[in-house]
Image (cartoon, rainbow, N blue to C red; front, side, top):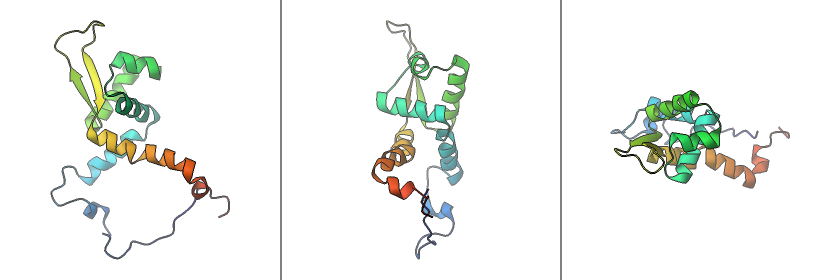
Length: 135
């Protein structure tokens, strides 16, 4: 993988926490927890599917992810805890008898679109930048 040898530029904060606005909604630790959560393959795929499908039930997620129910709910809870997805519970069953739906939050959409998903897309365009065989 290519390496970028740069120093912190003049005007850039030396402490990464200083990148946040003074009245930040979340702390640096909370942002890092989100990043860590989406760094798991199963959780990344859950957020990816929810972001691109609007909302899905656990049954629908289970059918495309092919993981057992307890593992799915573990990952759903982890993603909810860090604020990347949200759960919506219907008060009445629909025709399939489904009550619970999950969807990506705006933070989930943004982290996905401007994080891992963007890196994956950029590899198509910048394959040479990722290649470190010449270094």
